[in-house]
Length: 212
Image 1: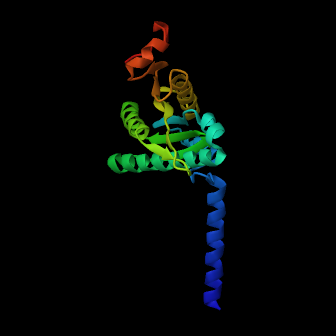
Image 2 (image 1 turned 90 degrees about the vertical axis):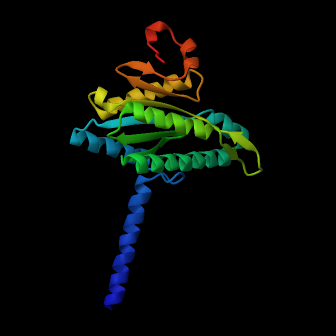
């Protein structure tokens, strides 16, 4: 009788845990979902901490992928990118000991929340990941090889007054990256856009303060 009772309690506990996971995670990629993203920002604001880097990532030309190869392949691309992003997170966490959380922001956009790291360090690491990712091929079900790339924008919450402003800044930096050729990461620092790629310079006037 005791064994059956304990078994029932254990099954109930597992069902609850599964429901909690499903409510907070994206079914396709297994990453935390947008609902959980908003909860995370609420928790950060309650703690009053600004020691975070906000990183917004977006798969380039995703609509074209869907239109050309279908939504099934589009979903496979999302899962492929999520898997590679997790590998990057694991590598950086193991090397630095810093906490990194991944979210599927919506559609082909992903959000990365990095605690207690300097923005220049994050910039170098995501640039390395971008370059390595660009050399890989995604293979469709019928064997076609596709080049998949992404763009990114990042900001430092310590240069703002709230984590939500940092997210907004990262999103604006991503917008610049997408509209200046894609396949690049732009960081926003003290209202200036900073990039490494010299080929970005022709897209901006001097007033926009784009620096090498």
